[in-house]
Length: 91
Image (cartoon, rainbow, N blue to C red; front, side):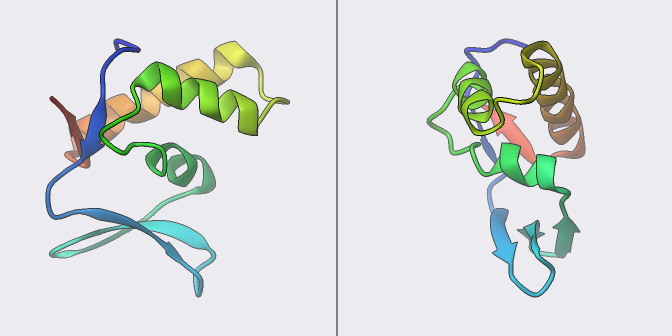
């Protein structure tokens, strides 16, 4: 995965914080995906403007206790999975 790639949510999908569930959810026309904390943190930074490197840099600043190489690997693996699931795409 290239760190200069810019992702955005699939058209018609949106990320939202669900207070009742205490987590982010990904809403789409036919339903909802409940996200864990890591997925919510990553997807909250996928805005069609930040590239993958920017997302990783921001997450490193938010979670300085996380080993940098593990965080980078986790972000790449999650984004790969999100692309395969059709949640996000890049230009």
